[in-house]
Image 1 (cartoon, helix red, strand yellow):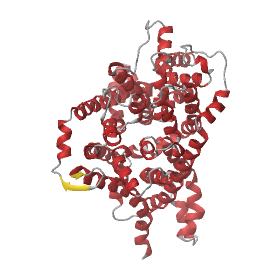
Image 2 (cartoon, helix red, strand yellow; image 1 turned 30 degrees about the horizontal axis):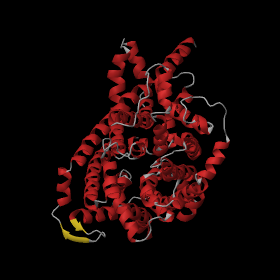
Image 3 (cartoon, chains in turn purple, green; image 1 turned 180 degrees about the horizontal axis):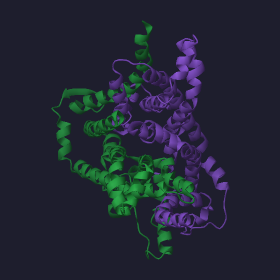
Image 4 (cartoon, one colour; image 1 turned 90 degrees about the vertical axis):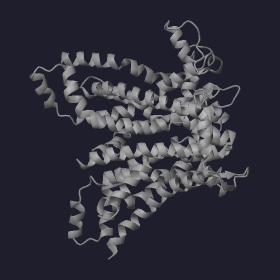
Length: 274
Length: 289
């Protein structure tokens, strides 16, 4: 027992510098968000009182509600669309043998590595040609397309882990492919679909550069762009509002992510590494 | 026979979408970069790759290219050097390991944009909380204008880059470490191997495939990373913290040099493709074994 205690102390001491640096921005974010306005610019750490009304002030002053709705709208389109399109593909790749399988899988692996930033100029020109700049719906569809390779890949790595025996048993009993799919296969992979959907949602929720390029007026801003616009090119920055907005926009998604992070790794990185 | 076409039918929509969102913009970029473009964006004559030639003559581009190399090597290398010991510590059994893991994973859970916004505030010269913390600890005696010059801004951006890359890298290594059987270490300890020898002879060789994957994946992500630099300094002051992505964004959407911007895009796309090919070969090789 004492050896474990000793080990724990050494482990925490070794990790301490990294932990301090990691927690530092979170402390800055939280403490600034709850500081009274006149204390924000004075270099003290601890606020004289916790001003929770900063959050409601910020909500009104920055148009947080509209940006939140835009972010939700875009992320839901991306998530629902990507899942609907990629479940059949992942099912086919997991359960059928067909020519071109290897090439398709390689293509998916390559295309999920292509970051939108190198294509953003082309995308912008295409959207402009169609008159779709400013359209949050179009943005949702762009996110959907960029996430499809990731969702197919993730779903297939999960589908591959579901044993075929159950489906084969259902076929023996005389159930057709479609019935087996609905009654046996889909219920089994529902958790995998949910996890993949949540990661797609988070990807869309956090995306910066495409949104920055496509969305030009405040009514269409998503949260990252809205928060960025509070900081960029302004003479006076209301930092307590900015930090309150950052905190509100970040916390729910961060909690989801921490909770589900191990599934992401299993599906993505280690799905490739094995 | 219905079954022969079914898999193609099922995969086609995904394949189509994933392909169209890449190839359509790429086709457009090829068009603009190799033709003269009028002020209204109309294509004129083929221009003999003048835009690509212009890039090599542009000192800003060459500086950004060089800085991208520094940025990528330092962030990927730094994250690697930090993540191996962190993963080894987290792989041992100690009190509060769960909490330590969650804390170290936190930066991964927050979007880069938000992280960069917070750091921009924390590094502010007059009232930033990093300055007040460092003064409070007695490490510095006057405020440092962190983001006012590249000498302090760029190293800070690299540090933040490392910090947000550590969680992903650590997770990959934790996966690798958990696949090493404990009896290897027990046998080595019985033979009298020192911890350093155990690391050199057991941990490092068995971790190597994971290190390779981490290097290639991180290189791809870091090379493309836009929000940290854009939010904190927008490549400034005077383009002194520009990397290729921020340079590209300015060319395209600030200055409006579409031809050169699309040439930069294509150069980056090609570099990205090379790294991705390396990754695919690594990943597929691991999968076969």
